[in-house]
Length: 79
Image 1 (cartoon, one colour):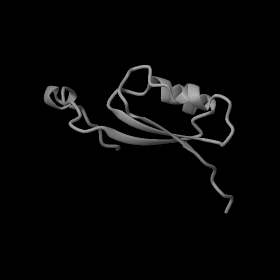
Image 2 (image 1 turned 135 degrees about the vertical axis):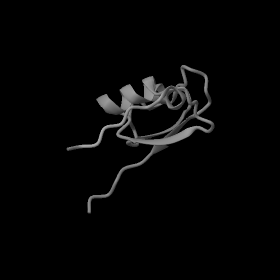
Image 3 (image 1 turned 90 degrees about the horizontal axis):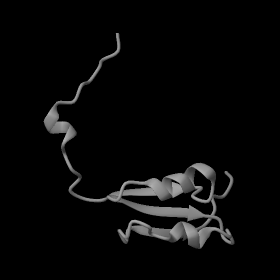
Image 4 (image 1 turned 180 degrees about the horizontal axis):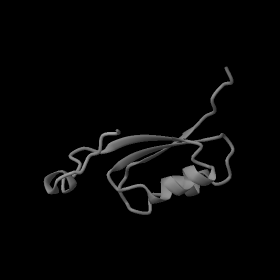
């Protein structure tokens, strides 16, 4: 039987004390761009897009004004 977990009130009301650092590979795609736009304000986002992506600057915009968005240009080499 799988274990279950039910958080108590104290656990659910905890606020993050430091930003969560998140690397979004494929930030120019459908899922990555959605996350980049809708991520919680306490997430420090590093958005990886391919060089020459026409929507790159739009992704780097910080609509929430958090100052926690960094745009990274690059690709992964095939193994």
